[in-house]
Image (tube, rainbow, N blue to C red):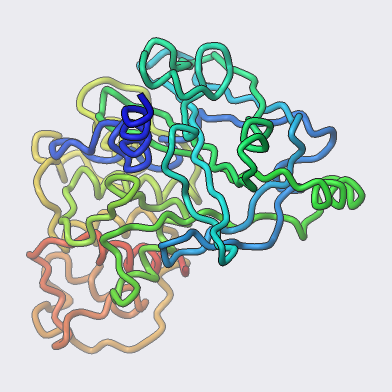
Length: 382
């Protein structure tokens, strides 16, 4: 029995419990994927930001640093809710991962059956793994309250930081998004937050940036990927993978155009049927990002050329992002009077792109996710 539970726990920790990204689909934007997840707690006048401890700790066996934890008491009551207005098929689950310190004091994930789902009785129970019907499933409009099982871990003699996962599953798209929170019973830090009072600006926790196994420390694009993900402009293709070399489709380019435009222009994707990308296609049409005769829905699953990417994203950002910062007399493989020439020269002069080692734009070729991360950082002054 213990071996079975441990195997199931390991599968969960490796991200195998949830469906993998389907090749024929594309990710939902980050803010769409998690916008209907609400996690709150009864902590008087304090918010999670008030309780954040600005003291990072390192995950054992990994080279990333997790920013702080929220200092709570063991009787803190949490509530998680699926705040969607209608049942669109999405479901919300909640589970815990446990981190304990090794002999060197570095916290590491513990692979055992204690990392479990919230069950139908609002308790974190390893037995829920054996019967899927016992796992609490929240649909639109539903919520649940619970406490963290500090008492159980005390009986094991462990010092523990909990990583709470609120996982929103989109079965329609074969895709799952997570909101994560780190909690530790820390009475001194909790009392200090109470004494300081609510909404102290010095207690805001930095964002949690996921660590992708295919984005190495030495990769030239790593800083741009981290910035783009932290800003909510891009997500991984799974919890562990970014796929930096994967080429972008026209449909995914429209999603990025929505991401950029909605940040300054407001608005949200219309609720229409059809393929997953049709709401973003319609948003871009409604916002003037693309013209009716520029793209057809049937062609959106094809790869976007660099020319097409620049023409689309150029309409999604304000003119203030395109102020010239350098002189560009010519581009080796493109004249300013050519189709797409005006927008590409504008991007060169604004420092958004610089071409290959020979200065060429290579407009007919496709663009990778790593290259897109760089461009998004440039367009957002990150």
